[in-house]
Length: 190
Length: 190
Image 1 (cartoon, rainbow over the protein chains, first blue to last red):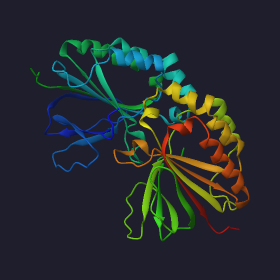
Image 2: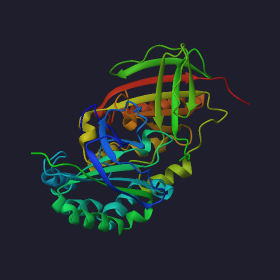
Image 3: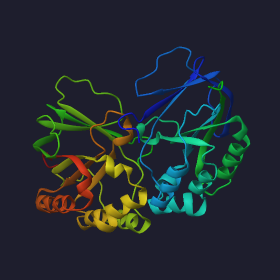
Image 4: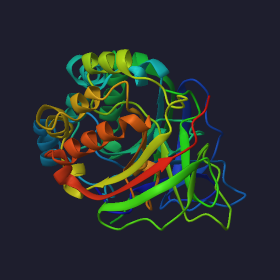
C-alpha cells in the first residue's frame, strides 16, 4: 500500500519513457495505436492533444490473497523501477457480468483453487515484477476492471510469455470478455 | 448489480426528499450540519451553492459473502423505496490502514466468523433494507471507505438501533476509525 497516493494513470501518445512495441487485442475491442507511454500518479485529468488514450486505476487491498500466499509474495517479489527492467507489459482486462455476480467464495475457488492464479505468478518471482490497479469501481464509464503493469529484463521476456500463456489457459480466463496486451521497452539505466 | 449505473451521490443541503433528523460523529470527524438530503445517480459533479456536503460511492460485487449467505440474503431482503419506509440512515465508515493491510482470509474471519456481520444483518431482514456503496477505490481523496444506506418503517426504528448497536460491539468495529451516523425521515407515500 502506498498511503494516500494510490491512483495511477497510463497515458499513451507521443511522449513518455516507454516505447510501445505492440498493442494487441487478445479479446474484444483494441486500443488506438500510439508510439509511447507514460505513467503518472494522482487522479488529476490529463489535457494534451497528443494523447491517444488514458487508462486509470487504483492500487488497493488484496481481494483473494490469503495470509500464507501474501507472505510468499512479500518474500519473493521485487519492486518496479529496477535498472535492468527494460521491458514492460500493460494488460488491461475486463471480466464478464457472470464473474462479478458470483459470491466471494466461488470467485476465490475459480481464481486460486482451480486456476492457480496466485501460484502461477509466484513461479515467476522475482523476475517479473508487477503492480495491480483496480478500475471497476471508479465509476460508471470504465472500459476495464483491472490494469496490471509488469516489468522485467529483456532476457526474461520468454518467461513472461510463458506466464501470460499459462494464465490465459485457466478456467478464470473463461470469464475475461476484454483483454488488450501492450508490450513496451525503454533504454537501460545504469 | 445495476448494470452500468452503479455510481450514487448523497447530497446534503437545502433540498431533497429526506429531512435530516440528526447527524452524529460516532468516531472521528463529524460532517457539516444540513437540513435535507437527496440521492442522485451517476458520477457527474454537483454544483449548487446550497450544498453542505456530498458523498459518493459505487455499488459493487460482494467482498466477503459466500454462496449460502448470498442465497439467504436474496431470499429475505426487500428493495429500497418501499412506501412504508419513511425512515432512513446514512452511515459512512472508514477503516484503519491495519484493516486494509490484512490478507483476504483474515478480513473474512474477523468480519463473519468472529463478528457475524452478515448474520446480524440477516436477523433484521426484510424490515431493514440496505444498499452498500464503496468509496475507498474512487481515488486518493475519499473521506470514507463505505457508505451504507438503510431504509425502514418508523415502527422498526428500535430494531435498527439494536442492529447498529450489535455491529458496533464487534471485533470488526475495532478497525473503524471514522463513522458518522445520519438519521433521516420523509413523508409516507400511498
